[in-house]
Length: 148
Image 1 (cartoon, helix red, strand yellow):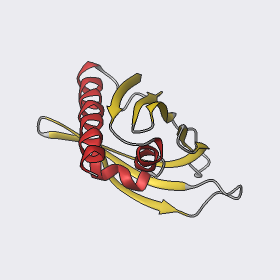
Image 2 (cartoon, one colour):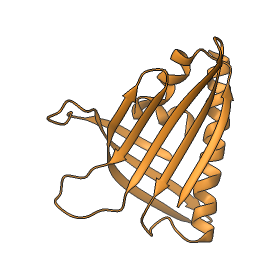
Image 3 (cartoon, helix red, strand yellow):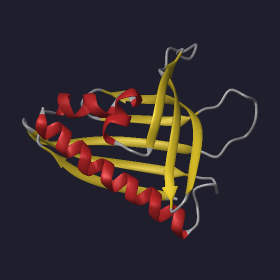
Image 4 (tube, one colour):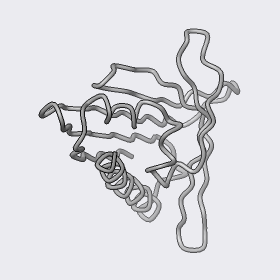
């Protein structure tokens, strides 16, 4: 599954990037991200977060815990987070990529791409719910940045 969203942000590239380069900030604007705790960095110094995703489908809730590592960090331009568990088992990939395209000094176009390779969140209904969360998150981020 692949979900892509672009949103115009009335902010400098630095301000916009500060909202997407740390997963600890996501629960403020992305309701899919229920909880985040920063974990010790990898031996290579990459930042790591334990993330809980939660989505409601009628009376049922789906929840997923992931260990996410920031694998690409290009300030004011691009950041990529990838699932990397340390339990020795094979896990479905989760990849979140955010790319900023500065149109002017005071505005950017943010494109977020969420790629998921498993089956817990698949199926038409759950895929739609996940897509709705991402869409609402993009709008909430634009509102939050504009309010700064």
